[in-house]
Length: 279
Image (cartoon, rainbow, N blue to C red; front, side, top):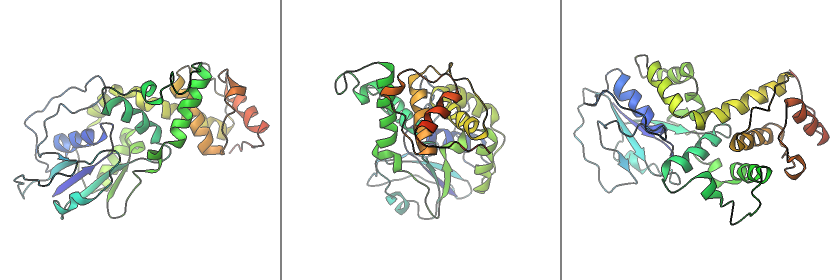
């Protein structure tokens, strides 16, 4: 069986491929058993068993052994969700790595930081040129608007007749393993590899985990201190999650100073006419 691993940018496809080729039952193994994640947290140094399908080539040739399973990476680029690759793999099962509104900030960051050595959050948003104000509150707003308004936010959703793997499913080992098993794929325990991946990608993953935790605090009436949330990108992700949850945009200029606790957020929401329900 061929499993096409179809993915947006950010290194997630290569990591799923690593799990399947190193730990998947019945999968053709790569000759390379050990590899290191690079400084951006990607596993691209692991040798592929089958060639990558890259940007819709005119042909794809590889001698697959019908007695084995294979993982084939499908890389169309971030903006291309064409399924033309199925003409080369008509009997394959497709694992589509997708993102929801809640996991989009992870992709938004990794797309910029991993897919091009010349790109970064700061260079993409052109903080100095298009918006000369470079104070923390203005940078927060710029990041928030990027998360809210970027056209890729609504792309790469789940698809029918495919195995759909949300990037959010990869944030805990138990969920990740369960999802792969739900696809009918048997995998040996890969917890040590997952821990290495999570540690190497912490800067991309933790802002979302932190913001989700704060939303849970608001919804349950628990007071959480926010003084340690000093990273401007993480703060913008928090703004984005507030917008998703309560349909409220924080008045950026009115809240130049960052919130000290969730009590401040509750006051801000109530001032805008939003009642914070506590379950």
